[in-house]
Figure (cartoon, rainbow, N blue to C red):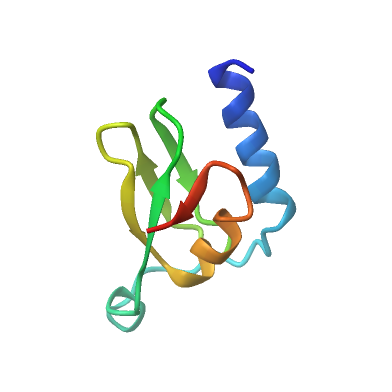
Length: 84
């Protein structure tokens, strides 16, 4: 599977489990608890959080990101991410 197919599969996985309820970052949710996710691939990607709509950037040089727990729960269902 090439890089484009991996990104496409990730989008389909995230979109199929998303609730399409993006929120804006406010002081209240900016300080919310975060979950550490590790990206398991090498190519750089931008992922829109399926629950919050936030955009997270992952790459082989920056595979660990703190993610909103509601996004993390859905993203780890794909094979591209795992908990911290």
